[in-house]
Length: 318
Ligand SMILES: *Cc1c(COP(=O)(O)O)cnc(C)c1O
Image (cartoon, rainbow, N blue to C red; front, side, top):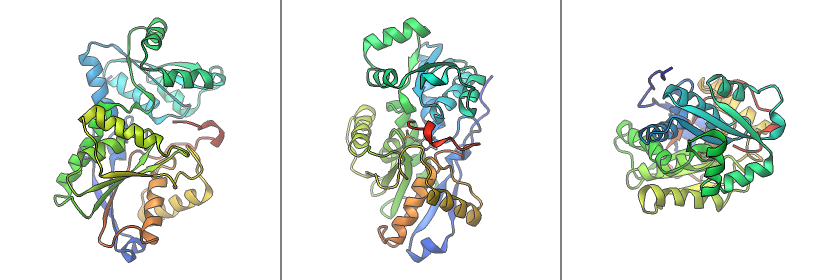
């Protein structure tokens, strides 16, 4: 099974909204959600470079880890199958092993991914020691030789893949520069790191954290990706930590109704766990006068809406 070809560059479209016009702000959507049906959004940008590198290094199998509704795990399963690689997903929550599969894990498994379930303490240990030789030996002993991708897939090749978003945008908005703010939702930070690194001088990147309590941590992760991927720091980005809506995977009623209203006005249904949080933050920032008049804001739509909402109790992680 090979992957249908992607829609690249992803389309860019303007959103006409009097609430933003009143604040002197232009909003554009960079529709990465339309890149691909089964490897959509930033997952295409981040995974394809990793899978191509894994194949070039002679790997036949990739392994990653994530939560029960992880977009990264599901997309990796599809992308790996499309690139002729076996895949293994280590999933947080040993209670899920014998439960009926949710839609996301069912799709991963249908794409050929082998799922393994670990309890929460074991998952934390694995995540923290993923790059240590002892952990790698354990994984190889159990699953066979494999390329290992971190939670969320954020590493230097992934960030370089995401930098293509900024490069494309610079061809679609040739005067991209001082009045531009490029915004995306943040889970593990690879997408924001790449966008910031790829922007031309003057333009800025803003990430909106979709998880609570990540101030400091995410900034360190992103700076680490810049050091690993570009060998330097960038000072054109920041992360908002106020718009997570209560935490990872939480969708408070105000957020859901904001998204509903946006859909009615503009005919585009925003994904709720990440994209709607960033979008709503931009509207709030415009209304509060926090965006300079004359700003041109591009929201990178990092993924499509879920087919079914995830139960709030089950989504305490990416
Ligand atoms: C995975 C994902 C993100 C988070 O991307 P990071 O690179 O981990 O910050 C954002 N939006 C959507 C829709 C996603 O699926």
